[in-house]
Image (cartoon, rainbow, N blue to C red):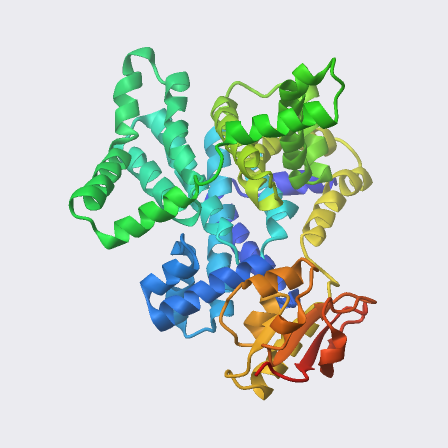
Length: 500
């Protein structure tokens, strides 16, 4: 009997599917943390901010990182459980990850109420490599993704039911999402506009106001706290928010790049087309990144579905396309301003696209149900297994950095002046986060001059196989080295003398 026929006969109980999915999400998080050697570079800032908040207070935490809500939560978990900060961060992320899994399942059932396979969205999200590869990363994106999905769930329900409870929850959850990442503010402004697409003509403005009443109250309260009461906490939040808009605006950056491209890349006959060509390139790049984040299997299913399948009218895909358009615009503006795009920036867009992928996956499942078992395994089960395995960072071998840091923490006093070229070595050595200009030059491979070197007691450097430190080695004595199986290592050097 085909495998999928057995699965489709599962009890038609969404609650059981959600419970099993949440339990499996916990298992995946445990496995991800268990196989992880060290945390990522970005994680160090969040962890150090949490430590600073506990040891020194709110003001010092804001000095270290201007949007520290995620770090405050890590500190709260640390206080409640007694876990070390790193393990507290992993626990918090595991909770947020299971919230994403559960919300994805619920949101899919809302947009596709006629779904014949209650288990399918659970399988799709649990095997989503794009999310699983971050399970061992302590990053604030987890809170942003989780609460944004929750906000979208209740916004969709509000569009369907017009209940005030859903309007309130949509606004509450998107505010919480904004406390993790400021990009959620764009969804606050733009997502309610979807009401003008789906609402009845006579009720558009009334429902729009209802969907924004809490947001307007928070905005007015913030203005009063900032201008009238001069509340220091509100001032800190406003300052942090404004720092996000420093520098050139996206349009200025875009036109500067287009002008450079017209002068240095294109001929004089096509230079006028540089802005159009650059815009097309940016839009194509982001679309490619979103599909890449889906992974090969899901991308194939999605593209095949877009070109070959017609979804039933019961699927409320217009809502998802509206959110995708907003998320796409946010990523385009962010990229135009910063010229940076990483997987974490487009993961929410990929999660939204994954809802459509799951819709198309139903037609894939229907096709495979009539085939023999081996085709089911090769075309459905095996790709999903590969997806799960691809989400784990196996064999990276960076445990040497933790060992080096632990040795330094145990054998060198805190009074010793130690310079590193990696924030992870700095963190595991028990040193306070301080990304100094000297450290930046070492990270960039530029080296430092002898006068600066002689102000240090020790150097703890991460060195690639065959590489040498970009400093005057005649002033250094190697104390201890920690080497991985690949030949990369962390080396502790003693500076031979100090400046008088």
